[in-house]
Length: 118
Image 1 (spheres, helix red, strand yellow):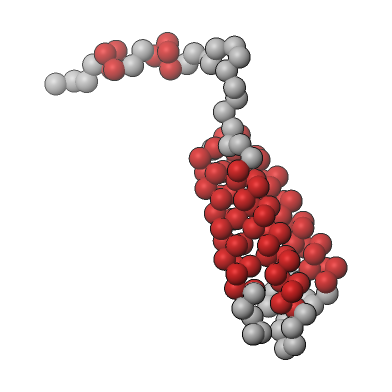
Image 2 (cartoon, rainbow, N blue to C red):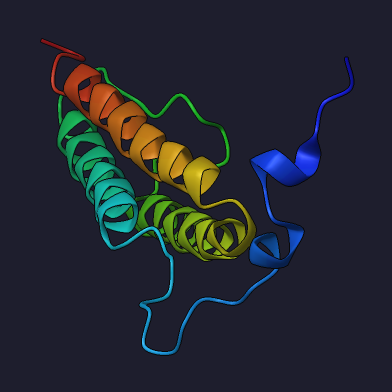
């Protein structure tokens, strides 16, 4: 028995725009804040760990230069947030996953940084 599509969805309704005054769909500030705070926690704990004896940065691009480390971590964070903004325009659910995931991942790295060299 063939499926009667007209019974399940009116194609005219599927293409209608949202009524005037409807708030735009977005991902809200949460994923951006989570990501930025995760990056900040990573940067702060990395700097703290590097002050301990016999601890060095494992990423060769960062080296042990504090200005270079902060510049690269800052640029990476800003770049990620700008990319997240672009993804959110077309795939809001994916953008939320990426934002919160980055924040959680960097939080885990920050927690690990607090244990290095102890």
